[in-house]
Length: 335
Image (cartoon, rainbow, N blue to C red; front, side, top):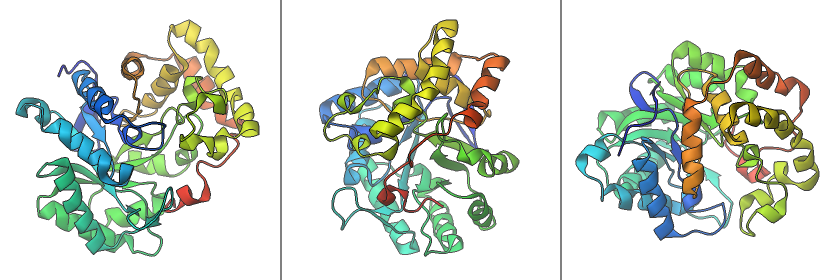
């Protein structure tokens, strides 16, 4: 491993590479799965200097955690010590078919999931353990108490929450410190800027944006369904439907002139914009392609001029993104 990437403070106690890696697509959702290739890519990720690896128990129904665990056990102790492993629980797919899921934040379920994740990852402590989605039928205070007990037991080091609202986050922090919040945030998903992002800055809670490239849309490489595999979930995602996709391409038209100015890609512009929003933001783009891995990492060195930042910041006032972020099933637990 070479620590060639800039480092960032994530929350108050974690220091990681400015660009992390989201491993979900290695096991599910984005086309065909090739385990051998996935292991190779994970080694490339680690060798590139990325130190934040993000997974969840629901990705591939546990297979993604097993995949990461199989790579971790091949690393020397010195390399493993530089990594921050983040995983999640709270989306229960154990008794559901296909894309269906239940949201479960019961304390006993959280504790069992933690033990299961530790076993699949083959580690003694999870560096960052998130609640993947917020259960509207469970008290966040009870959820946080269960997580606090896992910290006290030494099974997790830090607590994270995903897709949480500002009011619920405040209630959670009254029970135990939340180190990191993970939520969707990018040039085409900016709802957190109203309430959640200001609160994170006030409380010094780190932010990990997932889908920072708009599930690939912001790279400009997806022009229609023909660019997606038959089993790619984006084929049914509302924002990628024909009329919505064509409308949303207006966002790309604003990025394209900047690629020539900075001699970079649209995806790099999108990531650089995100990194510039706050010093404690660490996006986690995912890819199966080594070329795109290095392209994403290089965005951490790109600094946009103030005028260009203002242009990108103002896009939300001029372009109304069409389509929900997910189908209704995927919106479960987003508060």
